[in-house]
Image (cartoon, rainbow, N blue to C red; front, side, top):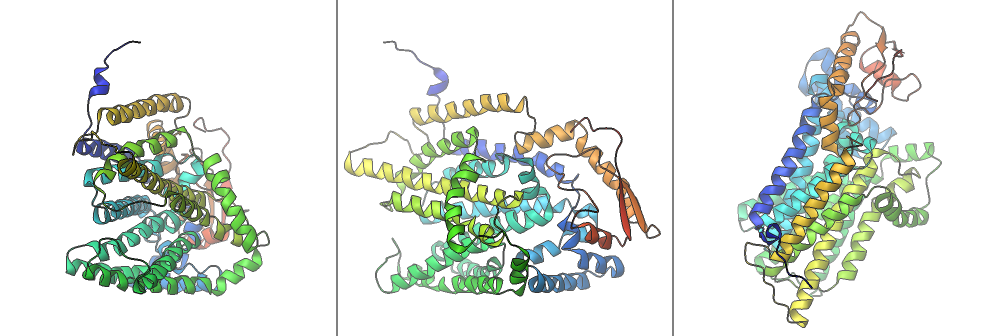
Length: 525
């Protein structure tokens, strides 16, 4: 009917500019989160897990003996509580054990490893294996990281995923480390530098054992990958499977991956046979049977993640992947032929996150485990979109004579318009959502609590508490209840009814801790 031009939609986007845009966007999102870390304070397991190292350092000031005590505490936990020896070691080595002023390092470590792990894995997979454009690869990594850190729906999930050290280091940190390990395996085969491959192979073996002793969710995921890798190596030796485009050197390097895979399974076996697992199992009566756990896990991918955790902005960002992966697929030589099989595999891997928890405790309620399930869902959904998008492009090129008008660097007019439309929708929707709820995104939550003084008030209250808790002459510590509780920082307070109460008393060498309730209500709540 009508012809008209919209100049803004004719502006083409280059891969490099898009990469820079999303990198800057992610950095701007992370900066307030890192600033917020300086207002963070330990709670709950932060007083129970590192209590031996803390007491040792407080009494001796000897860092070496403190680390020895950390290993001793891991051995104790392995015997009486749980078998995740590597995650337990990370938890007992809490920076706060050497002083609460170092607690801010926890979120720095967690966000740092998550960022590094995702970028390292994406670069290894897309650039090293598929020879895709590095700018497009970085763009997908930044979009993924924004989704992982900003689109977490509930405040308690954000706290445990990033700011509560005992939960974040156990789950989010090892999650990022798992993708770093997978990236190492890929680079052991595809990296051209022989010396680098040797170093990466050694680290892959070492970290393989460690990843076997991570939290049960991550350890199971990596164990599944290790089993699949071993099966593929065996089949490749029999000539049933061929490593695409591999020369003799690459085939030899690929066959060597059986060692880090086996070492990971050894670490996983050490985790499974821990006496502490059975002690904890005897204390839990709500856990499900193996079959029920698997079926409940398959259902929970829809119920917990898609139904309860995913919001509108996640759909927009998933759509953003389509034109990026479409352009990325232009130079990919490997042929994608099984989208249905890969989709089923991705769904099963996401669901396997739930199984250890349902089998062990019967529920999936804690924030840290829901955060991990969300992160796994985002990455595997992104990989699934990549597979299906490239498969569609290859199918149309081979069977329908499709010819793309994409230039080497620039997106087509249609793709550019699609990307800018999605970004404008995201900006508009975010304004509507953040206006009534400043805690809608992680970054806006941080900015709000920083601007209103809630974070500063929380820190001031904790500084006053520390004066009492660090006073050796005070055996009955009388503390004021928190008036300020930043949503993204506050996990739990000290309570005589809480399981961690006695650990907190022991941590600070107190006979009793009494909480005075505040008489006024906090306006920020």
